[in-house]
Image 1 (cartoon, rainbow, N blue to C red):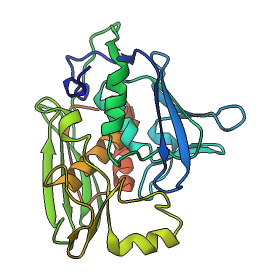
Image 2 (spheres, rainbow, N blue to C red):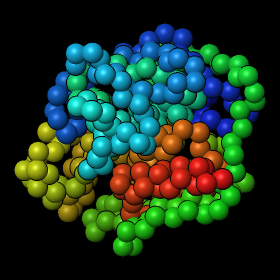
Image 3 (tube, rainbow, N blue to C red):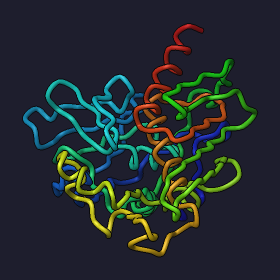
Length: 291
């Protein structure tokens, strides 16, 4: 199965179901722990969820915005004493490929970073195959009625009414190799698998010691993240000339998946973060309740 044939769910695409389990293992970015993941077809209508199979009772953590525990350099979900971190890359892949229901079993506190992108997840899912689920009613995307924006200083993330689903992102860094970048992507015009999924997470060399002192990025390496120094990229080549901002779109898609079905909107972000992404998701959820 060609992963590029799958696009983020649009009105004409029915939900997809995994033909067989998907299994991956690797090191978590922040914990440095080796974890194993098995993705199973979920119960129709129950959505995506994580199951901590290494904890007695195998607690289930729903992949929903109300389970978000913290958003420091990744998105972490938790319920009671069970948590799972760095969920955004896998969730973006599942959402983009139309997998609305999935049981994700993991034997540790963080998903593996793999190569720092969502491409390995997309390829693993495509390899086992997907079949469409015939819904009782034709799936539709509800249009967003009013714009919603979240600000923090000059950073923001917004959802605007739009005739098509679109994601636009901007970043600005003092490092010349990154600088100011913008990218806009519409799933109706190009494939998530080829245009967004391969974009890897990135970091700044000047921040590494500080982050490690804070107990973060214990599993980060030049094999699973792009690292930018004052004079350029330490581990080129890049997969895209603007790979960093494409990765930010990947993160945004993963975080937005915690809302469930997305409204028809143009999602625009600038210098945003997981924190702002989740605040937008909560605002979108509240707007649905008020309708």
